[in-house]
Length: 114
Image 1 (cartoon, rainbow, N blue to C red):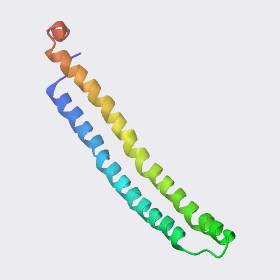
Image 2: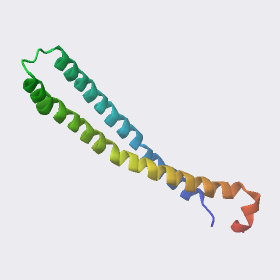
Image 3: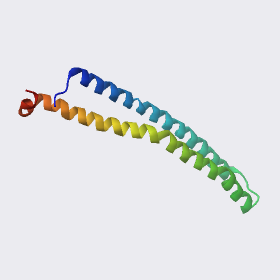
Image 4: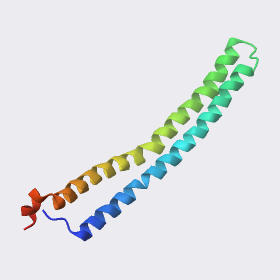
């Protein structure tokens, strides 16, 4: 099977498009990082606040901290799932393209192209 120059260009363009997912993933991770900083501030507040009793502290945990950490988890999942899937596809495509290109330079495979 011979790979043509236009096929190589097409494969490289598809890879470049898939690799744009890295910037999407970076943006998602930066967003989660900001959310975690906010969560850290909420935790610090919980240590500084003088809760009147245990029930008030538990209420803060249940109504503020738990929902926030669940949002962070969901945000991380939704922001990273698609980009990671596309990056995995890009990795597989890059490997297949590399194999095909190696075949072109490997003297033992030259009979395949005659």
